[in-house]
Image (cartoon, rainbow, N blue to C red; front, side, top):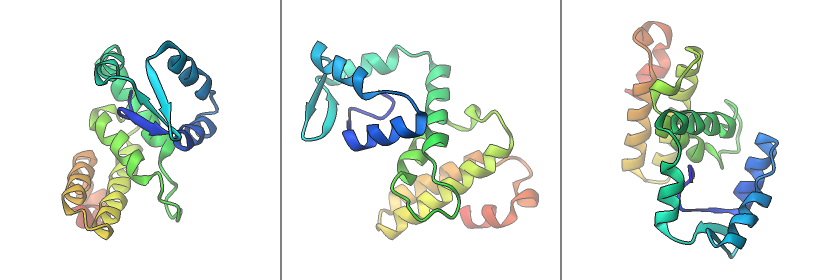
Length: 157
């Protein structure tokens, strides 16, 4: 439910590989129970209320931590050329919010990821999304960001 109402099987397999956990078996069990449908290589909730209930069953702090964990797990390494998971990772981190950061060094990492996602959105001519990523990147910067991360701050602003 943290990834929305539907997702592709290929993405779930990538997530399984990165998390080193089996997820597809649980999703297939949910299909058998009628909670999920599987069609054309996608899993989707059989009703939007089911997705909403599954998401709301988690405590708010747990949701933030899950989003942050998934975002950091999916985040491509700096300089990596495959940006296929970049936007998904940035969205997960932004759903978690700056409060979810536990290690101060991660603030700049997440801000940089949002910068990369914003640039990617601009390449796709999605300027509203680009603004969203840049604005979220700014929100992850710490108080002395102009002194500690001048170049990153300059690009985000």
